[in-house]
Length: 382
Image (cartoon, rainbow, N blue to C red; front, side):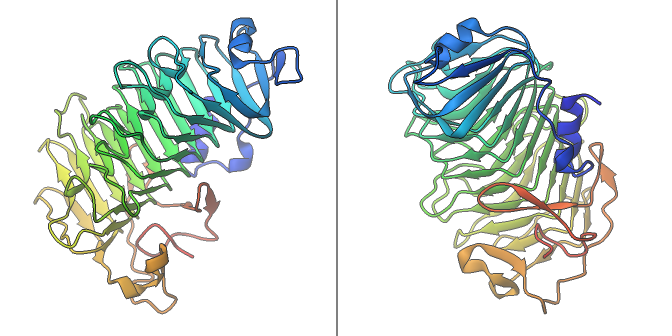
């Protein structure tokens, strides 16, 4: 089984997380103030296919690079590696530009990406495939931005996509173009500004066990958008719209045209929270040919789940704030005595997955395995 396949199966809860392994070790380059290679840019020039680059913890200011190598691993050692833009950028695109196949980045923070066209990103994924593990993005014009290329694959595990720099609207925490596959798990998307917390045009999307919450003062548009539809499995997520949102919709599917041949949305075992006093809309689905399955979701707030007649709906419940352990502090576990416990129903299969959660999100990022089968609606079973 390839490392890429292990990543996908683990993110879907179909393989223990202990089965995850980094790419096979190749030539090791060490980077740091006390090393022969003192900069990331120098390491990028020296790296070859299969290289493992171990980077000492610390701040790497204006140290930007393009990475064309295949089977490349970049790994922080001894703490966080902070890549700080400080006005620098590569190729007019961002702090890192990646084009190699089967690349992996672990333990990096990307801060302050700015470029002349105001569309800079912490990482620009231009080609190939990339896995991010335990990375964070702060104060960039975009967190990560990908090209439109159906051969690209992107896996995001236990990452943090935080506050966005003020901009002119091209300011998404994560913006994935028309790529082949996107898988996101155990990650936190928050404090958006004008753009969306997560926007994807991918053909296949697995969005599992995350927290997408605009937080107090956040001004995101959609919390989650699949602009061109495709196939999307959204399972086990806490998705929250702030009172200061710039769009009434929480989730949007296909609003910019159904360009993929297969159109299906599976919204299963999520906890959806709307802090708007009125006028919120949980879900917008534009292509009428889409298969839509809504099952075992908890809806918290004033909106109603206005659903088309052709949508499949089962065991979705509106929940009052006092159904939860401490909703005021974002603890959306159902109380032990809640009447909603045990009311989940079988959601079947969809998007290549069994639509039954096996893990749940753990704040501020990560997931934990469930002790047994998921029997209650919502993102949290404990």
